[in-house]
Every structure is written in C-alpha cells, then in structure tokens.
Amino acid sequence: MASTALRDFLEIPYDQLEELNLAAKQARLDRRPADQLREERLAYLTGEKRIKAVTVCFTDLEGRLHMLDYDKKFLLKSADNLTFDGSSVRGFSAQHESDLRLSLDWSAFYWLPADVFGPGKVLVFAEVLGRDGKAYPADLRGRLRAYTEAAFEKDGTICHVAPEIEGFLFRGRDAERHYDETGRFEYVSTGGYYHSLPGDQLRTFIDTAAEVQRAMGLGNEKDHPEVAPSQFEMNWSYSDVLVTSDQIQLYKLLCRQVAAKMDLTASFLPKPVAGVNGSGMHTNLSLNRGGKNLFWDAAGRDGLSQAGWQAIERILAKAEDICIILNPSVNAYRRLDPHYEAPNQIMVSANNRGAMVRIPTGNERSARIEVRSVAPDANPYMVNFALMKLVLEGDGTMDLSPGAVTRYLPDNIHDAIRYFENSGTIGQLLGENVQQKYIDVKRMQADRCAKALGGIVKVPEIQFHHEVTNQYLWSKF
Image (cartoon, rainbow, N blue to C red; front, side):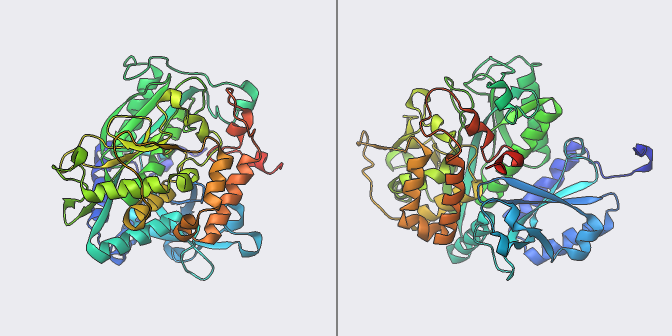
C-alpha cells in the first residue's frame, strides 16, 4: 500500500464542510439555473486537483441507493454519456432493454467527510434516462423533480417535508445478512426512550452520525434514543420535498457507514424484533405558496386550514391503494400492530397515535400534517411523489369528524399488493407499466416469505428484504 505521504487527496474539516453543503443546499432552494450550477461544478472539479473520484448516486424502484465511483478525469470528459446495465437492477429494465443512462443533477452536490467516505471524493445525485434520452418512468426521483418543478412554475407551490426516521443499532457488522446464522439481533443498549449514558455505544453512534449529517448540511434539530431497546431517531429541519428525499437516502447511508466503522449494524427494518416497538418514518408535510403556509388557519379545527383538511381527506381516501408504497416489505406489516402505537387506523387525529394521519400542534410557520404509517424502508421519492400528487390532485371523500368509524390498513403484504394492483388511481399516478414492475418485485419478495407472519420474525423476511445487500441469495431462486 502506498504511503499516505505520497497522496494529497481532499480532506475538509467538518465546520467548513457544513458551510459548503449549506451553501449548495441554499442554491437548490433558490432555484439557481441548472446550466449555471453545472458550469460551476465542472469548473470546481477541474480546478481542485485533490479530488480523485465522484460518487454518483441513483435510486431504484424499491428505494435502494446505488453508487458508482467515476474517476474525475473520465467524468469530466463523459458527464453527458454515463451508461449502466439496467437489467442488473431489480425493477428497472429487462435484459433486452438493458442500456440506461445517468443524468447528473449538479444542484444535488455534496462535499463528503473524508473519515467516513474516504478522502478525495465528492458526491452528486443522478436521474435515470432511457436509451432514447428521455426520463425513465421507473426512476421516481426524476418524476418527483419534474412534478415539483411543474407545480412551482404553475403557481409557486412548494411542498415542504420533514421526516422522523427511526432505526435500530445492533451488535456486529452485517447483522441482517447473518440473521440466518444467529436467528436473533443483539442490542447494544436497553436504556429506552431518551435515555442512554453519555459514553455508551448507542449514544456514541448517535453523536457521531449527527456530526456527519450536520457536516453534510442536513440541518440538525434533535437526536435521541427511541422507545425500543437500542433504537434511535435523528431529526432535521423541513425542506423542499426533493432535497428532503435526497437527505433521507444520505441519512440512512451515513448511519450504516458510521455503524460499520464501529463494528455495528444500523438497521432500518420496520420491525426487526417482535415484542417491542417498530421503526417508522413519520412524514410531516405542508404546502407553501408565496411564503405562506397553506395549511395554517388559526380559526380552523386544530389550527388547520381547509386546504390542510382536504389534503388529509385525499390521502385517507386512497390509504389502502398506497399502503404498499408506504410499507413496501413483508416485515413492514409487523409494525402495523395496534399493541405498539402502530398507525394502522385509516383516520385522522390530533392525539391518537394509532391514526394514520396526525395533526401536530403547530403555528403559522409549522402547521402540517403527519403521515405516520410510512416505514423507514420505503422509497422516499415514491412516497413523497405519491403524497404530493394526491394532496394536489387527488379525489375521494372521507368522514373526518372526531371519532368517525375507521377502516384499517392491510395487515399483510399480499392484501396490500392486491389493493395496489386493482387501483385505477395508482395506474394514473405511476403509469400502468411502473405499477406492474412494482407489483412484480413486491410479489417476488412476498413469495419468498411466510404468508402468515405469526409472532416470530422469520429468516426470509430479513434475508430477502430489499435493503439487505445479499444479491447471491436472490440468484438462487
């Protein structure tokens, strides 16, 4: 191995990283012209000799984050012609239509902490294009970006989102991949809600991961242990829906990497351990137009405007249809258990945490709705695309009066697939081709697992979970 004295790769202190990433984020929020940002980034890469590679990220249909490292000199020459084999990505193209391209979104550019991602690298998000150069329909990031841009151009509407993402910290690297050998996960802490000693492994992990996300410009608010043993939650400020969706992918990536460096596993399985609370990704959502929060009305019920109540009605009216989008795995349906604050009731409430939608206490700035039934393994681009489009264009009526009789979300993936498959709304939302692709990958996962969940977490629902990297197992079926 070459001596480090022979290499001079980019390493930026955390405080400077935060300044750089917050400035890049602000440029996105200010909607700086794409061509201008592209020229600035290319000029920076050309001039900064200490950068060796650019990490390019895209997300597949199920929500897995894929990363390719391009040599910087190659990328500068070939940025407009980055191809990859789409047939190797579940849910993307078939073998006969395998060639896909990546289109770099230079506004979604991040400087990386060298101690976590390695020195001399920067990161940029990309969207997927077909052979014809047009947007690839199964790339939900591209569709979300196009939809948000159209909404803003039409009347200045901006969708703000803030997630609350819970996860578990388990002992050992790749604990999910080795679940078939052990049949159990080992906690690193049993302290519980808000409690852990300052120097224990859970607190050390949370502190370290929070430092990394702060350096990457996520805009930290608070972090703490959660209700279940060895469970954590780290929150950041609301932002534009596409920025937030990117940050969800980065948050899970950096949590996994920080944990791995500590010989631990950060898991975003919705219910990895039976008998304790599961993990959610509560999604707080509001609309803004001309600097005004459209969901706020001081005189409205629970401080919510008519537009806010209409948004709730449209989401709840299609709750069963979108359930497999919000809860995309076999394991996710264990979380929808009413014994553990599970949001499985298709209703709205200001206080009942079993309701699918909750109305948090808010003011003119923070008034929002909270969709509680979202699992942390969901594709954030698909979730936010579906919710935003339903809020702006949906239909259907619901009785939203206090104490109204509720329906319940499906309690297994098979029923959720049937609702999704038979929904005309989903066909209009995603397109029938993408609807069928998603059904195929979800059914493939479901068919590898027990139909009756029972009280014990089964090995296949861990092994064949879409976020667990174990391509070798999939190829055996």
